[in-house]
Length: 321
Image (cartoon, rainbow, N blue to C red):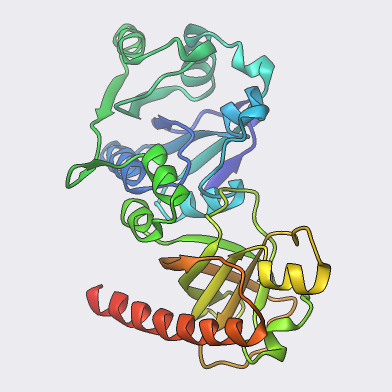
């Protein structure tokens, strides 16, 4: 996959470009169908499959106060796109200046002049240009006049649910990580370097790997059954994970106030030194809310129950897959 940081960096148009355009936040199952059709069309004509996407997300660039939560980091999105068999990805820097581009100017300057597109593939809810004022009717007219083939991919449904980034965010906002995974086609995850904690988990018999939260959607605080993927050895371990501020310790050690939110992951039946290594924590199902306990012994007892619950959930999930 060849990556361009903005369309202006393209010196020579791709050969017979079949282009799809969008934010593709989450690279979910609906997006994958769009990519599948883009790649298939390009292969049929001996052309080049091209994705045109944005960094940052347009809503984040234009409305930072809205606190839009992304389903993955921008680098994670590029990794997921690379797995879809695409030839070229254009990651367009999105700014207020770029947002003023009219639909007509975008079509002529980017799709015609820079990319020499012969076909365009978009989703059913596609809109483009300043204020998203260019819809499917405008695009159909532009393509017809330019002799470009247009494919509009209908919504992908799983049962009664339309797969969309918004629907996945709604599921995650209430901790429904298994439903989100069904729509994403993979578990929602956080990835990061394991950082030094205060060693509290080890002292009570449940050592944890601590990750700082990625700059993306934050799950509701609570305890989850998870899989921990250790990247340097390409190995996955069963785990149980707390997302939150550890209210029991906050009161015991600090008296008042909250500790910074962290992801604390305990690998089931493993004693591995994880400090400084990269860990990806994949969320399979929710066990319970985070809550404050009366003391350390009550917390230890509950963690023991959480470990048993996570082991059962993970074993069951593998049996269903």
